[in-house]
Image (tube, rainbow, N blue to C red; front, side):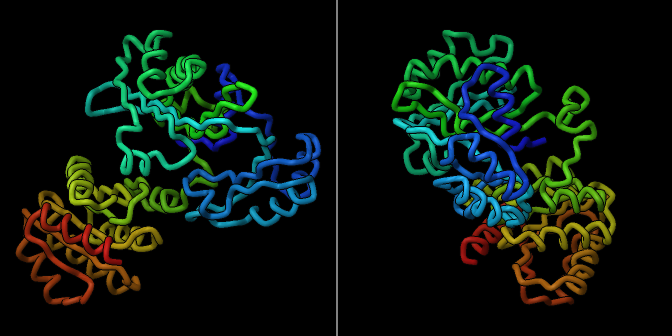
Length: 377
């Protein structure tokens, strides 16, 4: 369960991490009054549970209360990557001397947590890692040991952060462990010209299994303003998670889908989602899943990777054909069928002969082709 930025900042403040003063509003009139209380000049930030707000026009400076009202009016109702802006946060601006990045994330592969830190904050950490990998420090954290004061100083020193940032690392670990979080991130953590260390932005993902302990964020874990594709998938009974890439993924079985995500990433592609149609999925489920992924504007190609067991490959092929008849397909599909009734399934797709449907014999081959098609789109 992802929290809004203002909720993440609330958690930070509760655990002793300093944040600038801010207010959340849902109208231009309340934005104007809030700006007055905050000193006039404010940063206006759209509150949506997705990245890319700045590039989409969801973060702007307002010079005075009137400008804050106008900016709020322009942002409210905006669509940012499929999320409608229903509230905005007004925050007092600060004079920044330096920006840093700090986070803790669950590393399932090592059954531990990973501290990620960089002295180059304020931008996408993936971009920094890709262009200047030495600028990003990764330090494993033993869950049994946690982040002691010494460990916090070790992380800060390794990343080139100022010594004053070490207490923030300790307190951020408290947010992670005491609030049932899987991810906590501050980007940017800043040092102001007067020497203060402040968290200007925050991201927190809570463990869905701990919803019963996190009732203040909603007892049932449902968010009416969350990702619309995930909401649509839930309504159809699909096991779907939205990701940030361009290659849509469909598979049968969580293990196969996870492997497919890894193979696509290894081929240079970026998965756009996790979608497991299950071991006994029908043609209708396949059609629903494909329709959902094709409706994602971020998707540039789709990879269907199915090993026929309980789900026979001819039923999967029927579902794909059914979707092709009901959905306007403008994105290429790469299909890999293997196992139960695979030859019959391939024949069904060959007979349909849709110009955007490509078949591949292996998972590696299918992943490479889907990645290339997405890159060329």
